[in-house]
Length: 160
Image 1 (tube, helix red, strand yellow):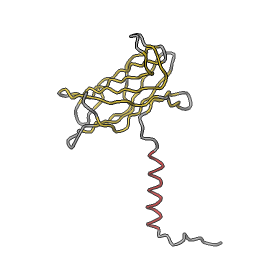
Image 2 (spheres, rainbow, N blue to C red):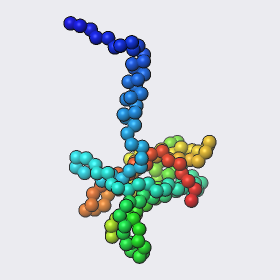
Image 3 (cartoon, rainbow, N blue to C red):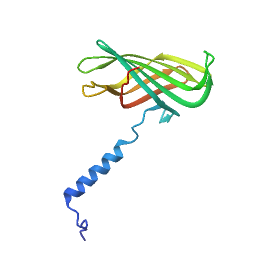
Image 4 (cartoon, one colour):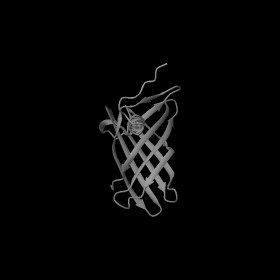
């Protein structure tokens, strides 16, 4: 039996390189996404986060998140535009800050869907050194159309 040695690499260097490569592999996509959750896997929808704005009001912060798609729709208000998904999120300050309530409004093709939004996870970063930010995973259901999950990476909350 022969023993192979790594060419001129110290164990410490090997471990550091392995950890860096592992970390890069685990990071994955850090872009906001909307995914339709199916029986065995999810389908990423062609929506991108356009804006995240919010305003603190005492013990809460109200956050509006806007996703836009590529397809044009004619909405009930008579305006033409791309598919759009609006999330309204209210966080309650505390230790930790927690999700208080949420709703969604989705103009998809020629239909309007709206309803409650729930939180799978949410983190609020206070902004003592700059603008506050948040991240989280949220979900909603549309009867007859499925279950959807939204991922928002750490993003600054801009004032409206």
